[in-house]
Amino acid sequence: MISEEELAKLSFKEAPRIKVTPPGPRSQEILSYQKEHESSAVSYSKGMPMALRRGRGATLEDVDGNIYIDMFGGAGVMAVGHGHPVVLKAAHEQIDQITHTLDIPSPTRKNMVEVLRKLLPKELNRIFFGGPTGSDAVEQAIKLARYNTGRNSIIAFEGAYHGMTGISLALTCDSHHREGIGQLVPDVQFIPYPYTYRNPFGCPDEEVDLQAAEYLDRVLSDSHSGYLKPAAVILESVQGEGGTIIPTTRFMKRIREICNKHDVLMICDEIQAGLGRTGKMFAFEHFDIVPDIVTMSKALGGIGFPIAAIAYKDKLNTWPAGKSIGTFRGNMIAFAAGAAALNWMTENHIPERALELGKKAMLPLKKLESESAIVGEARGIGLMLALEMVTDKRSKEPSSEYAQMVRKYGHQRGVMIEVGGHHSNVARMLPPLVITEEYLMKGINILSGVIEDIEAGKLS
Ligand SMILES: Cc1ncc(COP(=O)(O)O)c(C=O)c1O
Image (cartoon, rainbow, N blue to C red; front, side, top):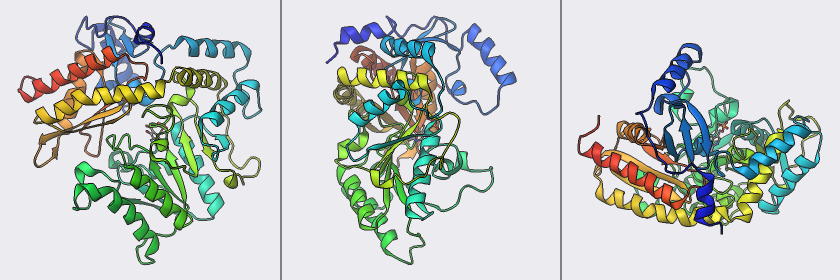
């Protein structure tokens, strides 16, 4: 396993370093320009106002010279961290060779397929590169499922986030994204995810997972349920934007069995949870199942080069040539960078380390849960970590305000995080997997300090 000293060399030293409370004057200038000339839809720079100059490992520097511990990781993209030297080298070499080939093969493309084939279960032996983003991978997965089954309907889960385009948006639950833009793609229905903290069934908490799985069986078995037999059931192996909700093995196994029983395809969306994040290369491996189709993106391009893919079982390989086409379907730089990153992660046991480090991180996070009156629950698997913020622990009244405050003041004190959850009340951490234990603990400590100050009424 790679040493902490080696990992420390990837990041800037002495993070965090706050020279001026962000946004500093240079950041303010660029933010004003953005506000004036870019769309009002820009969002991350509103939650963490700054302009960025450089990134290294699990640290980022803004244009005012502030250095942050990055526990946001580009929304889960930066598994190997910013500016990873091995990945940069591979990308530079590729730029000098060839950068665009559509789907005409090349040694670089072949290498990426070989790397993925080694990492994926042997049953998922076909790979398709669609458009460059995660949403595109979801589009392809659904199209493939529909084409193979001849059915239209799709079942997804409450709290799901699958993307921002056609079908992927129709599969995304957040009404903020769904409202006000006209008719969404039809034939999508939702069922409850096993969100034990906010138990959707009123049963004992230990039974939420089974209740959720049996709900699927029920709607598929009852001809009066209002659910048409779907082409597929799609779910995140660990629900990300919905608030880092971790299913149980028996839930996932039961969903697999129910899909088999009803001859429905099972799609695992691994765009956020996949590629080492949860402590396994693919999060579904925790649950000892193999889906029929898996989606990948985010960390697949190494250090943020856009690329997305689906892997699927051979029996689904029925598309005729040109059935699903597009200009940007396999970025050569992303292939080179992504393959280098995945190989480096495998050689250095980065997923295994993420699992162990995640367990260590859960100790202070669980301590916060037990000691703080505004942390309802701490959850995590690998380096996918979260604190669900509430105004009151007994009523579990969600507090979006506290989650935003954790992000805002965490940022001001030098730590970047994300906010998600059903009620935008979950402080989410997706640090690069190369973060040192020292920086991770420092980051959590800073966030704990912010939470203490919120509770003490020192921040508003
Ligand atoms: C689970 C999951 N699926 C799909 C997507 C969409 O990916 P993209 O934003 O690259 O389109 C995301 C993005 O956060 C995601 O977390």
